Image 1 (cartoon, rainbow, N blue to C red):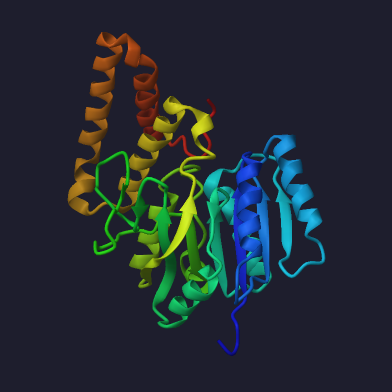
Image 2 (tube, helix red, strand yellow; image 1 turned 180 degrees about the vertical axis):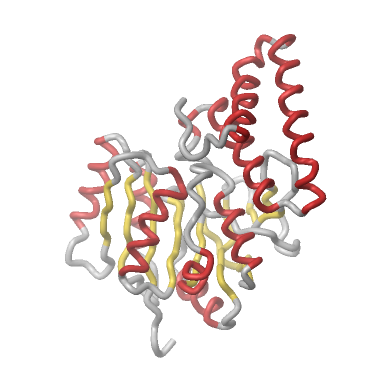
Amino acid sequence: MENPVKLIIVILQYNNSQDTVRCLESVKELGYPYPAFTVVVDNNSRPEHFNNVRLFIESQIGKVIRFKLDALSQNLGYAGGNNVGIRRALENGADYVLVLNNDTVVPKDLLSKLVSEAESDDDIGIVAPAIDEGKRITYGGRIKWLRPELNHLMSSQDVIDYLPGVCLLIKRSVIEKIGLLDENYFLYFEDADYCVRASRAGFILKLMPEVLVRHKVSASTEQLGAPLLLRYHFRNALYFNWRHAPAGYKILLPFWSFFIMMKQLVKIAFLPDKRKISKAILTSVLDFHLDNFGKIDD
């Protein structure tokens, strides 16, 4: 590549500083084209985790790979935190932004392969690798409407509807045309939402199955606990379907919402051991109908 593009990496951290440092160690080894810099956005982590990353970054001053740390005064979630980094990347003239989870380890040739693929076709807007989750490898995902979860694919031959937000190389032209991540989600479904918006704006989503990024699944979210995670899942699934589902499915959305509520009310009445989770799911439906989006106060 004679005229290397300007690429900036955005890594969002919320606690789990050991994972973040491990990720940054792998980023240090990335080959050509080197990123202009990597911005780590700290989503108001506990002091010990923030300081662990701060000390690591300070130890890298003067080296080839440059790290910058943005400390937020509150947890803005996946979308809000990454948007801070994306804005900084655009302000610094990035042609590409690589959104990367902090609980990943990347191969040395990640950038050269993803950028080469993106540069091969002007219509390609977002490029992503396959994700090695340890027990399985996933290859993008399919959307099943009126479901509380997205469906990651186990075969690279399947047609993809979205690319998981674990590692996304996004062209500047995509961000300029469709904007930033939707902060109403806070957690879950933001990646699918963004990919749907990009596809409908005419951009191609490109999966590179031969490139593998290792991912420690749910390292940052598991600490929230099952009831709260389910509350995000169901609320955001309703919001995602309301925004993007085909007309036939969208007509059924009120009935699906009613079915979810009735099912949880039955569980609350007759299954005491399920009450905590059922109440969280029931509340998620109310969150959606009352426009209670963004961060949920637990």
